[in-house]
Length: 148
Image (cartoon, rainbow, N blue to C red; front, side, top):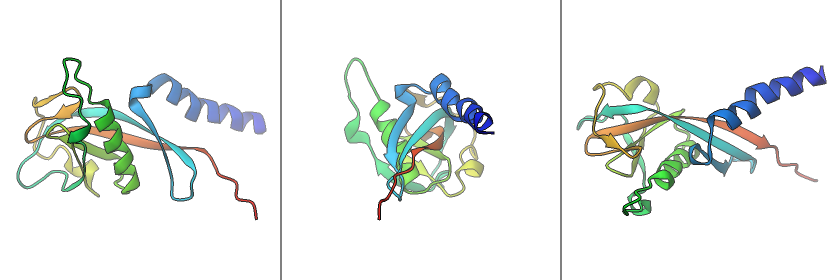
């Protein structure tokens, strides 16, 4: 039975992380008990936003993290959005708009595409009135043992 559990862990947890995730699509954090967790994320697509927001909560502004150089890199912004979406308990999705504003919603899965697809995203970020939407998952690395 232990072998079955080991095989199950390898195929359901370790293998998906190693195959689908890279250093650019995974960030580590801690849960409320101090356990190390890995937050993996993948792009869903670019979607229109309007004044009546699809994702109603701006929970983090990462615009100051953007490296505005010839080799534009938005990785840090997207990672921070993923980590903060997890920390603020938004369920499974977030959007990045206006080059670094992180948006989500308790109903993100139902709302993110309410205005349709947009072409106003680049470098993994939404521009004006567009959300580059990501789906994220959390995997606990190893429980912290507490000694009495």
